[in-house]
Length: 145
Length: 150
Image (tube, rainbow over all chains, first blue to last red):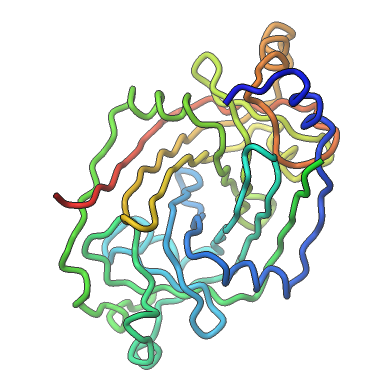
């Protein structure tokens, strides 16, 4: 997309930035099911798109049992980002859940409906279900100029 | 390490496997060139941080603009980052994702700045006085694609 000069100067004035409260973050988190998982390794940060669902107030996703993520996820604080950005209007929101993930225990796993089970991206054999509790949530929204 | 055996339940609903394929280096660069919305991840003071950015590729590096008082301005100090760009089709469960790993720096060369100010694509999505240009010089670019099995 190429913008003409008028559009450029309009956008350059920028939109209004709003900090989202916890309740709004929680609502937005429930409004979609694709996010990006971020974690740090000794060789730098990683970021992976993930399908997720909210189960017992936790971001819940699946990953492979023997992937890099499965080895690194539980040793560090991780971040899960969800956003919706309108590239044309240069507006949207973005929110981040930060905390320590844990594998879903057997009891919770049994309680999980098939319909609730988060689909992995990409699909394949992925059997590790991971939960990130909604402890620390921050977000912001940009209103168009 | 914690035990993962509890969660290691075999998937019963996962038989229709969709394979993901690695994208070639040039394919990754072409896709990054054609897109402008990405998410940048880095280790901030003590927590990992992820934010959406509008970037542009210029002479092999990715650039974005931000305000000097923003969270992203932290990246004017050399920082190891991952910039992820994707297009995901939720319905078909297909899509691609590219990650560029690299180090950031603030752009100060006048020629580069001139080129970047002239770039139509480099419109950040957040507000403020975005006078700071950050470069991500890539060490490594990898990508993968997932397609619906035919």
